[in-house]
View: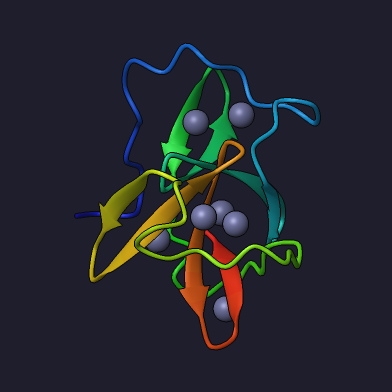
Length: 99
Ligand SMILES: [Zn+2]
Ligand SMILES: [Zn+2]
Ligand SMILES: [Zn+2]
Ligand SMILES: [Zn+2]
Ligand SMILES: [Zn+2]
Ligand SMILES: [Zn+2]
Ligand SMILES: [Zn+2]
């Protein structure tokens, strides 16, 4: 998939400081992590942004995600994300990443 200018269609949500999605500083702009995608505001729509080179660590929490933890899971590429309070947490090397 091209990462140059992939418009995310049908997006009615407006991202902002209080929208609850993790905001990630990425070079000269901010991306919002939304359902496993990185959305970058671009005039009146959002573009998909490629955050493969950015590592966003979730706030530390005592909860251990696992098969029986009760959180819903969603497949994301080669791993599984846990849906946790509106965030997607992916286990990574002793901590969780925001995805
Ligand atoms: Zn949002
Ligand atoms: Zn979005
Ligand atoms: Zn970006
Ligand atoms: Zn969990
Ligand atoms: Zn979590
Ligand atoms: Zn990590
Ligand atoms: Zn993920």
